[in-house]
Length: 339
Ligand SMILES: *[C@@H]1O[C@H](CO)[C@@H](O)[C@H](O)[C@H]1NC(C)=O
Ligand SMILES: [Zn+2]
Image 1 (cartoon, rainbow, N blue to C red):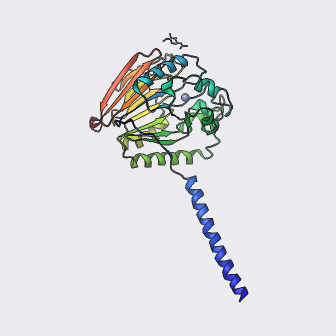
Image 2 (cartoon, rainbow, N blue to C red):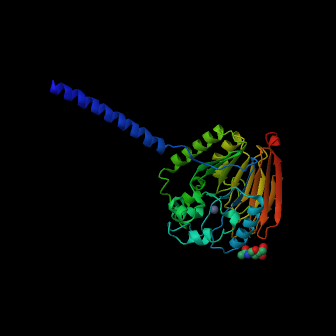
Image 3 (cartoon, rainbow, N blue to C red):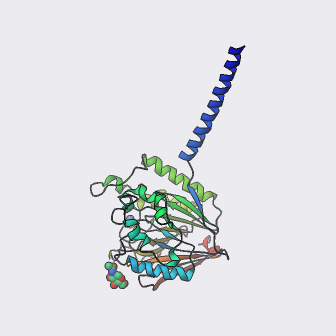
């Protein structure tokens, strides 16, 4: 009797164990293959949204970084911005050395001091960030030093009328894996490159398909289309662009080229917007084709961009280092699908 009872009891116990194990395995694999992490930002009371976009900036205020920051503060105030987007290459020359690298405060906290810029910053990593301790920039410890800082490899920001899909483009670029003699990269988080890329593209595609936001915006460090120094990023043209075209993307925003530019995708009507002029610029080398019809604007100097969105209109403005408006462009939403 006692033996029998014990047997039954231990059988019950082991099936309970099994259940717990299954539950744990499910939980773990859910996180391992988790969809992109999501964040929320409320729109303004009238439903509109405005934000600034800056890229390629962290040089301890030098190369006019502080001048650009000053103008960002003024425009940020005027537009009553909701947040700031950084398109990567956050810290020069080689990212951060760790979470205690003083470059974080010297290039971020002590430079973007204006009241209007004390908002959440949403950042991606650039190739220069991968040359240092890339994981340091992702570490929540930095948020204790400056609560504005939020940098993830890839994530989604839902801001009511707009949804933003931040994409880690650096691991997609072949050159960083084939030409390794000049620089080393911190690929610790990317053990299998092909798997990383294919899962990332799948996640982005799924999220875009499921999105019912009025405006869909993708942010990456590398340009899809550019007539600046680096030109088009072929890996993105091949792998990412078709997904964006198939899902009615409105805007693709990037840095990497140290310039400001606006190119229209004549096939789909996606606007390609480069804002990578947060500090060093004036490279002076255009790719051929800068006079093409689809190139709406190109500026080789420092500056930044603002975006204002309502249910029905998008307004994009580029500013130079002294705050002059260089290029302004408006599109009504209803025309977007007909373009
Ligand atoms: C800083 O901006 C001024 C004004 O546009 C420009 O003349 C100067 O060359 C810039 N300095 C650098 C280092 O780019
Ligand atoms: Zn770059």
